[in-house]
Image (cartoon, rainbow, N blue to C red; front, side):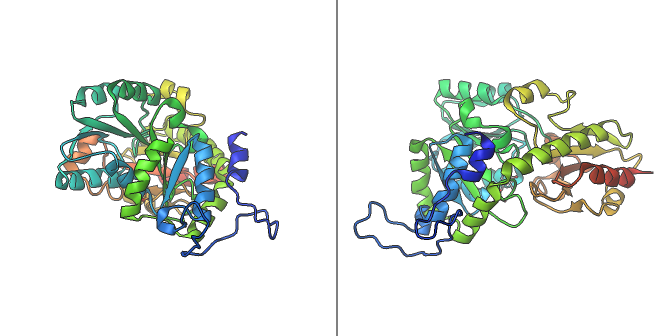
Length: 376
Ligand SMILES: *Cc1c(COP(=O)(O)O)cnc(C)c1O
């Protein structure tokens, strides 16, 4: 089965009583236990709606098993904590999602877990390894600079050293990239973004081998970040159009990136689908399309950030990403506001940087709007 078909069909629970073609919403939090192999309970992550949507995502990512969470951060923090003990060491990118960065800088200190933040390259990751290194956590494309790391190379290196790899695949989605097939151990998502896709859900997921997911499952039951039946059902419904949405978003994003690339009011465009992108060859190798996110720096000799944002109307200035509607934000003021200005400067996240999450609208409407907003 190809991805588009899996989006529609995998995991669906067919109700024998009604013959309905969709999974029903099973609202129970209490389930009978006599004569059953497993006890069903929302915080055990095994209710029918949780299982249906997890199975769909596992099939899309090529995973043996998975766990559905109530947010992306629940999936990321729980997955990491499941594999590390006091005194051990983790390698993370400087450019990780702001919430993951904040989690690491605050919680790891309290738990006496050591952590190195490195620039987004295999060489930097290699040189940060010490005897206690247990996990490498990375994202590709990175947020918000859209850097690309070679997943296969990092996974191979980590495997040789006996280090676990966790990849946040939120930006690419399994439609554009499947890290498990490139040797990574665990994939996590903020389902709030593309998987949910309509800016009306908060959820997350972790997928991998049966063995790894069993380890995460144990800790998940303590932390309890489970998703309710209604949201699980909505996520299942959303995923049926994932391939359609993500394909259109990537096509739109490429067109907008090309347009911005030649505009005099833009000093820099970050999009892995542009042949001039610093990691274009790696992106081509491991991605199908290049995703719906791009970022760009406004040339402030021509236009300032506030004027530019005030002239947009279809594209709204809002946080989050991955929805059917186009959304723009200034990472320095939103997703990366928790970093100090010095940390941001070190990571290359300048105040004039805009991150655009391209929706499924007509691309000409979007380009026209940006063009008039940039006009002098
Ligand atoms: C939004 C996001 C998260 C956090 O997800 P929540 O659902 O908000 O908890 C993690 N990683 C990436 C790349 C994100 O964009």
